[in-house]
Length: 381
Image (tube, rainbow, N blue to C red; front, side, top):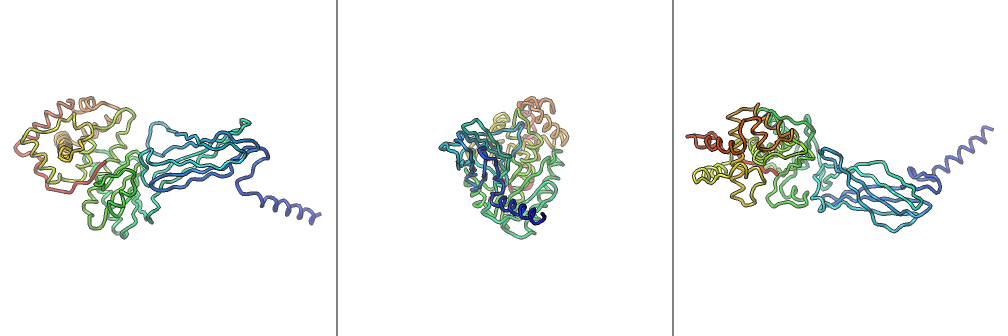
């Protein structure tokens, strides 16, 4: 009897071995037998599916969610075209040109729903695919809530940049009270060209970018532009922190405040921008605060003046009213206040009032913004 039982067990084991792992299904039952995703960075994510039934499969849909900061889950649905049949293999690609691209290190959650001609329906378990830039062999270091990724340079190079992150966070907390709330990733490309190659619609002058909804920064830094790179890190990191502490479903920050804080994190104003500001003051060509609340001009001269004024406006508010008021302003924006409403609540004046007081401050004999020593300015987006 023992020998017979062993023989039966062996037969059962051999039979099970012939069935593909994960594809076991009852006869005549609708089932997904394969599901996968392949990243073609930075162009697309290709999703593939194979399904079987005893009757024609008539409907296949891909559902996906991009992992980013939001106020409610947003699910996209793609209807997949195919020829109905009992056994179907199909695919669908999320082309980055359709959505403007995704940053390196982001991720997408996806699942399939399938229906056959007998109204049988099946849904796959949600899975995640990471949108990684596999063109390079990345190394990583983590300090607190920040993980730095790099592929060129030694560990000393990376640790020096990571130390810059810590200094920038401390400085930002000191003059605004704002702190990092969620983990962030910092990708260090070896140069601007490598960085631009990771983007769908790069500008030729792009040297760094902050993907604020994703908690991701990407900057092109080499050993010979380390000083600029440190300033760029402080700039882009400030964008991430400020957007974390002010994110709300009702309104964005005025651009002058967002860019002014980021530039302030770098240190002093660059000499060429100081010249733009001095020239505008001397010729009465300053841009109004209301105009600076919207996206800046694409013209180089107007854009340079806009950045210089934004720095000056933030410098005025911090030196005149202090860190507590600045943090209160950011907290008020988080509540969804309007531009005028937030300023009135915290400082007692609206954008026109800010314009007037700032002009008075600028025309003092030696306004502090013009006494600062020069420093490099990073790039913010």
